[in-house]
Amino acid sequence: MLVEPTAAETRPLGWSRRTNAATWAVALALVACAACGGGRARPAALDTQCKAGSAGACVRLGAALEDGGDDLPNPGRASRFYAMGCAHEGPEAADACWRLARILRDGDGVKADAKKARALAQEACTGGQPMGCLLLATMELRGEGGPVATAKAVARFQALCRGGLARACNDLGVAQRGTDAAAAEATFRRACAKGNALACANVGVIEAKRGDYGAALPRLQRACDAKVPSACVQLAVCASRGQGRAKDASAAGIYYQRACKLGDANGCSGLALLLFVGAPGVPARPREAMHLWRSLCESGHAAACFNLATGYRVGAKGALKPRPEAARAWFARACELGVKQACSAAESPARPSGPDQHSAGARDDGR
Image (tube, rainbow, N blue to C red; front, top):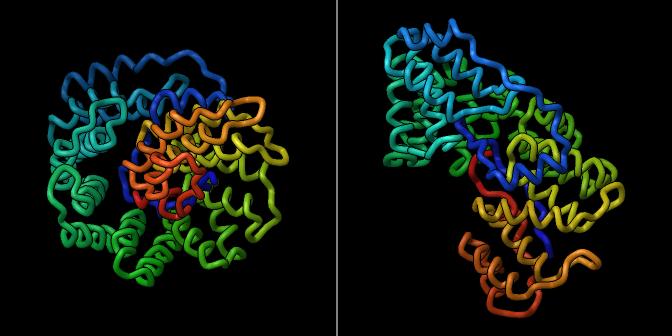
């Protein structure tokens, strides 16, 4: 039994946009990348100003490189300009420190360094950059780059939320969720009312899980349109199951594609599931599905490892021959990543029943 992904709650600031090169190579081929033009040279004046000590110019150069424009995004190169800006003083330097911290935390185009990222987030926060405080709180909450400091993190989220930063209200809800689901939902709703799309996605996921699809689907659609991948994944699940709407595998595929293009592993895994089994409006392409699952598995996605192993075990008529030894190896990897059913499957030739969708299909990484 293959595992269908579920939408995880939308995590705090600094979410990783990393998906390894193999995953993107396959995913982009499947979703048809938009036209790729030539690169844009960075403005010479900004380059000169940055090197002369203008933190603001360094930030603008870094932001342009991260965005990519007509070229591919280059966060690694952007980090060099952010580092130059961060070395100065003032609000723009604090902005540069926060941006550099975010890249280092995610390992986005550079080697990940959580300890340095946390120190830079602290520097940005001390310098008056609210987003730096938000990133610092996230890392304190998770114990990234240093010890867990839940009380400090919650206090920062509360202060930022009171100060009008809706994103912080969402992240406060994420922090509350483990201990007080009702309070978390109330916080998400307040943040959603302030216009935060991440919080609206979290409210929509909660509503969908309790079966209130009349409220959930429009809210999730708005959040998906605002490029929140967890909302797109939940819409895909609803479309594939016929929850609150007619079953529509083609629509599910479109939503999974959108989430995958936004860098969401569950979206890519869901797309692979549809491609492996096929459905009305979605021709089966099991080889592409296996490539996606493998690259996701190599990035640490447990459900993708299980699905990859299952694919090797059962094969696909006319496309893939069963490979029991490969199946055992990937079941072992899924077992290492916490899928209990995979542990017995790695030792037994019997076909596994599949893990629980909510525990294996989505990790509580906040997004």
